Length: 121
Image (cartoon, rainbow, N blue to C red; front, side, top):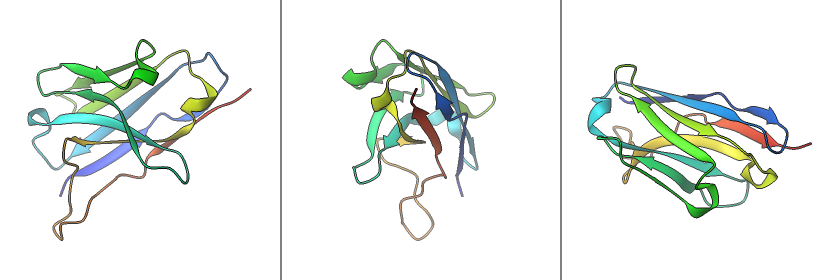
């Protein structure tokens, strides 16, 4: 069973930076495209950054030029470097496979606990 463990969130002032990490276990990590998603309470989860198995990246327009996704296949870890943070980036951030998320043996979608990012002065 794949496990996803996100870390690195916190409280930061507007204009600040954070680096998120997601440790992936229980799978052949290097084969999968991975993404960072974020969710604001009451809103649908949004995919903000994607990195393919060979390192190609793509971003939603709202984070282009500010966020950078990367991966270290030797460490089974995917990262999200977030610069020039804005209050509207405040959300819980999750990582998962792309385009289909990890599922449990029962077939339910599986998500890690996420990591809270709060951008506020």
